[in-house]
Length: 163
Image (cartoon, rainbow, N blue to C red; front, top):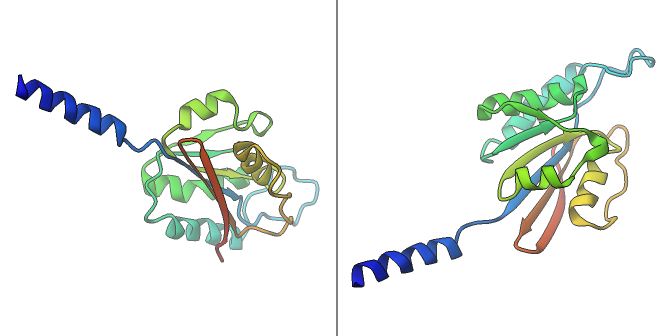
């Protein structure tokens, strides 16, 4: 009987202390090629390719469960080095449906990188926080990292500049 009680108590304790924290790292794509103003889907320029590699260094110690990106060349190219370094496939998301119930379910309790745009990344963060805390990014800001942590019902956020 004591043996069964011990097993029950141990399983109850482990379920109570399991980490149910969700952590989102959100960045804008790296520097894009601006030479053709009519190109709506440009690739990264040389500086952008270097920054995409530098993100991998910044995230070296982060154990991502998933990497999300919009389908644009510049976001996919920004996400690729980090995804490859973690052995993850890039999952695409639709910026018009960001942080919907499906995304929330799929990322609950996980650590996730989300690569977006200057006009979607802060909006995504605001949707997670359920408040309008952040304005759109400057069109030349490729260095901001938003980190949102959800633990139980508590949500925190911060911005880091990564040059």
